[in-house]
Image 1 (cartoon, rainbow over the protein chains, first blue to last red):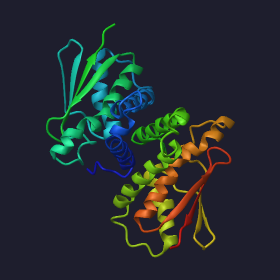
Image 2 (tube, one colour):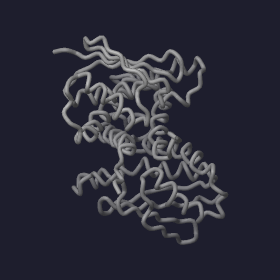
Image 3 (cartoon, each protein chain N blue to C red):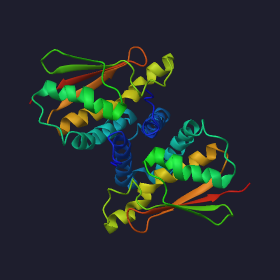
Image 4 (cartoon, each protein chain N blue to C red):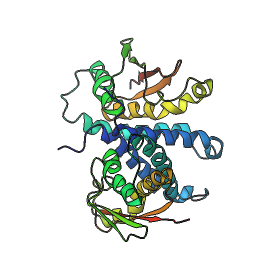
Length: 162
Length: 162
């Protein structure tokens, strides 16, 4: 199966350009209120907030938080990245770890240490995407990501209880 | 046929967020060297430059400029927007007018005059996308767009002769 269909490519390349802009504007834009990386996160948040609205509208109600997270790992991830999350773990206390062994936004980056150092910029948009999606469904979270060996990535979702 | 497949939606929504950012940051960012609209155009240029590389790599050589523009109207437009350009006209002197009667990036905007006024921001990325694609194939152009009645849009490509 060719996962890299032409339909998917404009989205990936647009994302890559945004990351590239952020990498090259680091010092210049830091004068503004928020860092470029957090701007990418916010862009992801807004995109995710709108996206889940369409994606989940024909979906039956989620039974619980875990059911919702499973939806993110399957339907949501497939719709955005054309693959499922490879592994989902939880401590059953509001922390979920979503592991993607071949995260699409990293799969074309090389293994260079230089890229590993820049990896926060490659994952910021997606952290926001997940956070915004869950927020729209009433779940407030903090989402972080960890890249240890390219192109694998672990997203940690920590639910904020009121 | 449902043109609005989930795969397409993240791209559209990401674009919409970028436009929205540009609309809301107009005054603030004008201190920088380039206007937000021209930043969108440049983002499109870079995305198009990379995108056409992949799309055209298995394609036979283009016979001439018109053949290349037809490729943009068909394969390229379908890959990005999932529809073809509806009408292509040329004066055979380096000016091409590509008409899209239902331009995807406008199809969800309302007919309000307010939107018509903001329409340059909705088309800037795509003008850049076309300009970057043609640039990669060795054709230097100026690309502008005109929105007279939503969601139709006319892109004018003017080839720059050396």
